[in-house]
Image 1: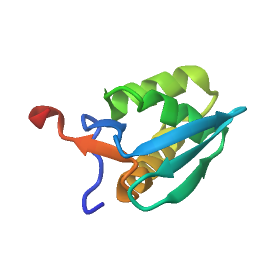
Image 2: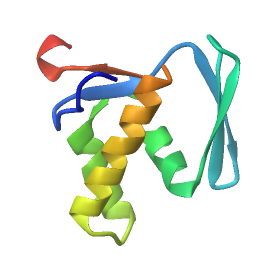
Image 3: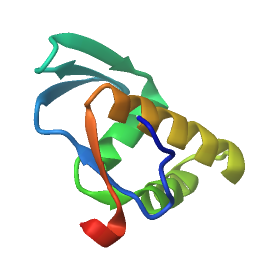
Image 4: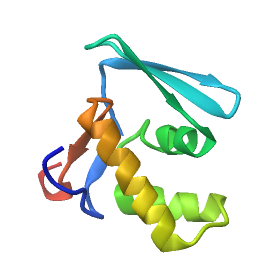
Length: 99
C-alpha cells in the first residue's frame, strides 16, 4: 500500500477471499493468489470488524472497548495490520469522502 490509512478511511473485507474462524483465531484464503493467512485472536477480532465497511476510527473505538490496552499502541497495531491486509488484497480501503 502506497499511503498510510487515515482515521476516516473506510475499510471492508475484499470480495475475493474466504475465511474460517478457528476458535479465537481465523484463517483467510485469498482466492486471487491462493495464499492462506492466519490471524491471532486480536487479528481475528479486527477481521470480524471489517466484514462490514467501517472507518479506522470506528474499529479502533470498538477494540478499545473490548481490550485493556493503551490507545496509541492499539491504533499503531491496528493501522499496521490493516495496511498489511490491504497490501495482500484482503481488504479494500476507501477515503470516506469518495465512498
